[in-house]
Length: 76
Image 1 (cartoon, rainbow, N blue to C red):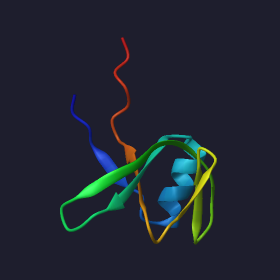
Image 2 (cartoon, rainbow, N blue to C red):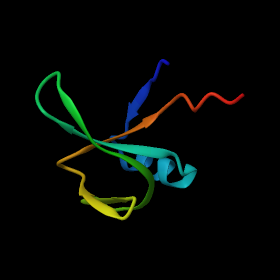
Image 3 (spheres, rainbow, N blue to C red):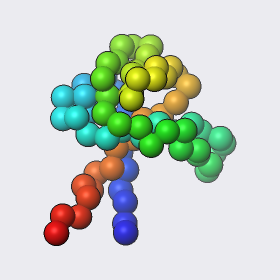
């Protein structure tokens, strides 16, 4: 299965993801080419310039990246 992810960088992208209720992944950078998925997340419930709330947990925007899968699940 091929996945294409979009890193949410701007307030507009976070707002659009919040409204559309897409599943967001919480990712932490470990270096230039390495990342760790901290949480496979869920929908964004709240966000501010400093914090984002996903699945009941608050994350600092300056310490984590947030991604969404651009290709939805395959439906049969």
